[in-house]
Image (tube, rainbow, N blue to C red):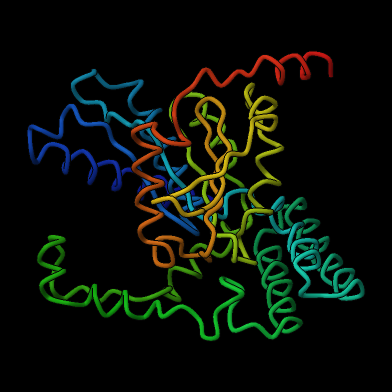
Length: 317
């Protein structure tokens, strides 16, 4: 545990150093707004670096601070204990499993939650894997990351791209570095981290900057249902009003792209026709989503989100 905390602190220091050095590379960057985005396990490391930056800024003069304006997390694993509880009900109501299978999955989910609450993080991670493997076997899908795919995502193409000498040069990376897709060494190092929550970091971020959570609606592993489950448990004074906010129809170039719910600094988007890797599945719509969120335009327009009728209902409750 101590060793892992030391590694995480070191990684955050390195990330902060990399970001600040990038900003110092061109004077025009100094006053620019900074947004940090990522997906999947970025549900952990995007909140972590965002949280680190905001805390670090408190100890730095204005001239040295990172002008963080927001973070965006796609199909993120952020609060695993809450999220692991949703697999059975999600698959059941999507029509992929029957009631008997649902109950079998729920038993596995309870075991994962129990182990996590005991602090047995390694075994909790194994228990979660068993739940997902069981769901995979029950459904017979090519991948839980997108239930419409006939073959899994070709993520090996990313590795091939990064191994290019030209790409390494552009990144300023040593040519001898070997990039590896889902490194076994990294997975082993993060094994005990997987079931730990960083929801408290998102709660801190949403109180101090903008947060966008988005999911592709075809993802059965870390999809919209699992994200909505932990949003409801957030310790944030605006969560009640967020939950009562209108879920707006979102269109791109006149065509339905998904749905967006927003209140204050928190936005939640569901992207239609996308699985776990939203930008890969819906490139144009993903770009439109991020641009509108950053610029606070379209369905992300910054309104006085406090709807009087919703506010009155909350007061009555």
